[in-house]
Length: 331
Image (cartoon, rainbow, N blue to C red; front, side, top):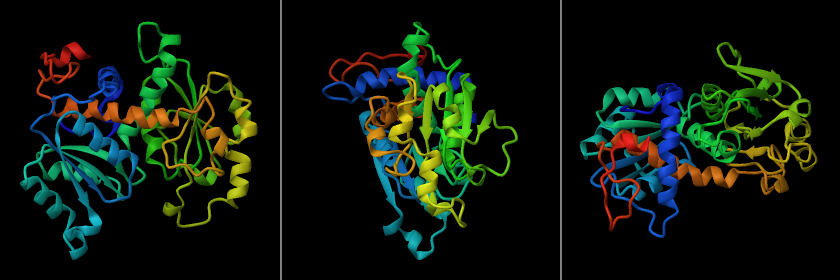
């Protein structure tokens, strides 16, 4: 695999391979010195044309823990402000000698275009309303970590039979699109819960059911995945008010009490506390929102290793006791 542009690039087998390899990097991240020389000599660039905290920082942390060099592109202080085109920008960066570029852009399809222009590996860090594959992978890993032991002692993904509701602004969400593909590929049942104005114009080909009422499905859910209202992407009034949205679709303190005791509450961040999720719910024991962020580093380490590793790099041993490990042995 040279690029990671979409969850469809992986399929079920690829997703499971990333999850298995992530187990190794979780162990690395728990060490006193959470670093291995697996990508020493490689250079990873963060090319973000949209604001980001979690994705950008976790990719940079992942690259550094693999001993790769990192470069960060800042639009606000770049030649983009002088009229430089996207193609000229990425070709200039590639000329400096890079191995991978993590791209976030407001326009759908940009990572695919960049992959046509340069030889370095391209990772989609979020494009428009379209895809966010590494977010879906870290979400899958977080769910697997909580449910696999109970449902599959062998350590499999254990998604079969899970019922996952994605709640909120699905229309504008790249996370929702990637999560639906990933959850369904692993065998989960996915339910979309949103007002009609916040659903995509067509759900043809989506392996989902739709429920207009959160209260109707709440007690049957294994996972409630909440989405932020992306008001910066809205060009028209799609909800009457934030208060009404919270009343009908917010995971309030009253609603969370009707979830099963082992259900999970998830959110990709950033959260609007008091809108899609109440403050006390975000801190409820069933909330795994901070675990998603933590798992994001290990998942992105796995992705970078799969794209840039040579096949005999060092992954699971400390820097002072290197032992070559074949990629096949880690799967």
